[in-house]
Image (cartoon, rainbow, N blue to C red):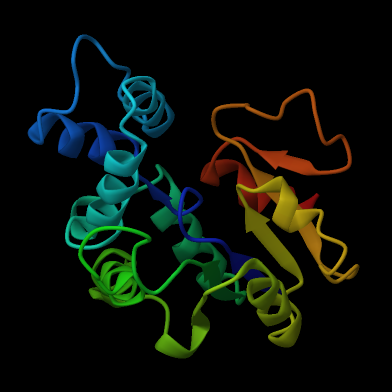
Length: 201
């Protein structure tokens, strides 16, 4: 089985890092929940949309190495590879941030994968199984081109896009149950420990 995985907010959790960097930069006033959405909403409420955009560039660029994988992800990769599955990462992100210094966001993500997704002390995924596209249509085209049997993403609009191949089994990664009462046609995954069981279902 060929398992395709989104990257940002599916493999990598940014909640604690976004809060930490915003705190380091003195952007938080009063208590703000330790998650990405709460920090974003806090900055927008203060009229700091541009600051929020630049903060994301910092997170996905030079601070990327401080991000962490969602719990259970590394165990999932090990189990999937041991079971003989092929695992690919297919993500979409711009090469440079929309604002602020022109960090290479693709290079930062690739470095994170090489140093954080390890198996037996070596990178678990070869570079030819890692794809960063710059647009959503290009991402979906890549999923089709490499022949994914399953794709896991946190964005319903990717999974439900008419261009997504009908043969791909679509799994919505939703650890905070944002979509528990919506998208009844999608199988929802609450965490990586649930995924292998869902694949066998």
